[in-house]
Length: 323
Ligand SMILES: Cc1cc2nc3c(=O)[nH]c(=O)nc-3n(C[C@H](O)[C@H](O)[C@H](O)COP(=O)(O)OP(=O)(O)OC[C@H]3O[C@@H](n4cnc5c(N)ncnc54)[C@H](O)[C@@H]3O)c2cc1C
Image 1 (cartoon, rainbow, N blue to C red):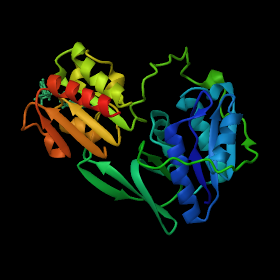
Image 2: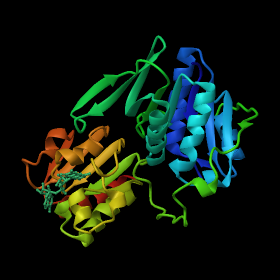
Image 3: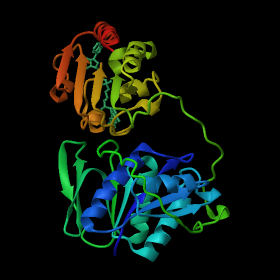
C-alpha cells in the first residue's frame, strides 16, 4: 500500500475551507511518510477544482467529472472511492469531517473493511502509522488512536488544522468514469436551496451563541447584533432550537454542529455536557449568565455574571467603538 489521498470537497466548483485544511494536513502526512499526495476530485464541471488541488499542494489528482457526482450523494461518490481504492491501494485516505466527508469515509471504510478514525483534532506520523487524537465522552477525554492494518482512513475536525496555501504547483489530472449510473442510485436530488449569506458556523472564527436565557425569538436580536459586530456567526443551544426560536442550522452541540472558533461567547447558556461536546475545543470561551453556579463558567476562560440583556448590548457598544 502506498500513497496518501485527500478528498477535495467542493461546492459548485469552489473547494471548501475544511478541504483546504485536510489538504494541508495530508501534505504533512505525505511528506513524513515520503509518499505522493493525490487529491480526489469528484463532481460535475470540476476541472477548476483539480487545478486548485494541484495549486494547494497535491502531487497528483485523480478525478471523475460526471452529473451523477454532483451534490452530496454518498451512493454516487462512495462506490467510486471504493473502486479507486481497491485498484490503487492507498496507505492513507484523509477527508474533512464535514457531513459529506463523514458519509464518504464511513462508506469507504465499511466497503474496504478498513479502519476509520473520525473527527480527529491532531495527527502525527509514527513509522508508517498515522496516530490521531480525537475527543471521546462528549469531549471530556482525548484519546490517541491508530489503525493496525490496511488503508488508514481519517476524517479531520473543522478548524483544527491550518489551511493549505497556494504553492503555484500545476499538473494534469487523471480522469476516470463514475462508478454507478444515475438509474442505480436510490436517492434523487430534486434541487438545491442556498442558505442565508451569513457566516458559516463551522468556518467561523468567532461565534456568539444564545440559549434558553434569551427568553424567546426576539431575545436573539442583541446576540445576533454582537455576532454581526464581531463579524462572527450566530449559534444556539438545543433548548433554543427545540423551542422554535431559531432554526436547527444554528445548533451547537452533540446533536448539532461541532465548532472550534477562536472565540465562543455563550449568552444565557447553562453549559450542559451535550452543548459542551460541540464547543469545548474553542480557543477562548466567554460565558454570560446570571447564575454564578452555571456549569459553563467551569469551562470558560472569561465569565460575566449578569443579565445578558444588559451585558450583551454593552459589549456590542464597546466593540463598535473599538472596531
Ligand atoms: C441526547 C441529547 C442530545 C443533546 N444535544 C444537544 C446539543 O447538540 N446542543 C445543546 O445545546 N444541547 C443539547 N442537548 C440538551 C442539553 O442537555 C441541555 O438541555 C441544553 O443544552 C440546555 O440549553 P440551555 O443552556 O440554553 O438552557 P438551560 O439549561 O435552561 O440554561 C439557560 C441558562 O440561561 C441563564 N439565563 C436565563 N436568563 C438569563 C439572562 N437574562 N441573562 C443571562 N443568563 C440567563 C440561566 O441561568 C441558565 O443557566 C441534548 C440533550 C440530549 C439528551
